Image 1 (cartoon, one colour):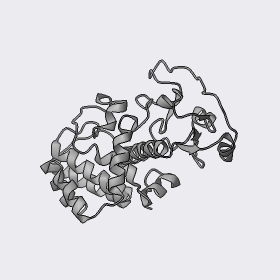
Image 2 (image 1 turned 60 degrees about the vertical axis):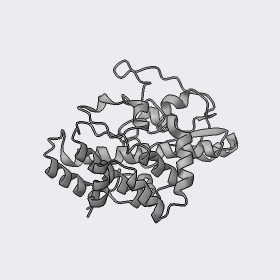
Image 3 (image 1 turned 135 degrees about the vertical axis):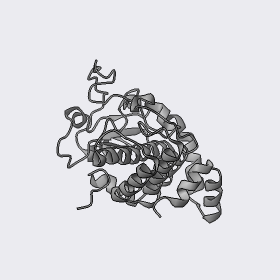
Image 4 (image 1 turned 45 degrees about the vertical axis):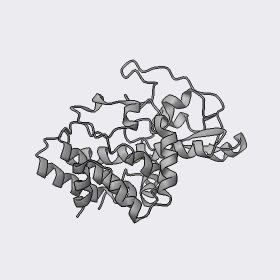
Length: 263
């Protein structure tokens, strides 16, 4: 049976409905493809402006992976198609990546989908000028993380410092999300409202607040949300001429990958 995007209905729905802010965020990173040796070489807000895949150092390989993720975001292609592109790129480049094939491809795919989605949501929430944001734990998770579950219903103003570390996703495979509301009464639609920021302490092993994986204690898209909002307005009227201009603005190797990926 084909595997879904991130084994989560919400992520599958996202893929079927890519929105302009998500596309704008991801494409804003394509001019900066960063070679790395390990995933900790680039952490937190650095991901707002650059694309990397842990251990991928070859420029053409990085360009191909970026193009495959772009296709997934803009066209809603599934993980099976990404895996096909991944296998072709690895064969072509001879990349000796770490980890088992299905695990590695799922991690690359779902992480980029989830972070770009949530970065787009930051831009949308600010555009909507919502006075309150609500943390919503994903329904249907087989093994919910206790602290993530405890944060369900936390309702705080957008400028509360808690969001700087707890905006979703909060770890590998996290499916939680943040929604905007106009009042505490509206927040009640999602369950019990919690009006104060939890303080669960710091995990000494990660340096992040407890319940958040290492490197995930940041707000995706926070440093580029104004730019994302401006680009998103242009993408709303995307046409063939604009698409050609966008492709022409990319580095040559990335242009080549966009021309061949998935073909």
